[in-house]
Length: 106
Image (cartoon, rainbow, N blue to C red; front, side, top):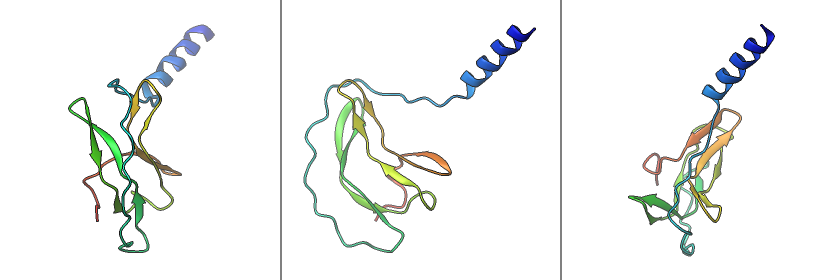
């Protein structure tokens, strides 16, 4: 009975586990140098320009000012681990929020 309960708890945990998905399209091009404009308000955070994946190709996404999804959230830029591309995201005490470049852009 204990074995059955253990297997059930492990299976349930795997169903609700968070995982990251990467896209294999080759190494990212070089980062572009950009001018950071004036901060529009005290709550705004600068998101540095970065390469996004669009239709299985890299597309440059210029830097922009935005407001975090909640107080204390920190921006983690997209990365390429040498094999896979991983999207940028916000993360803090209230959890992870996926990147949405179309929201709150200045």
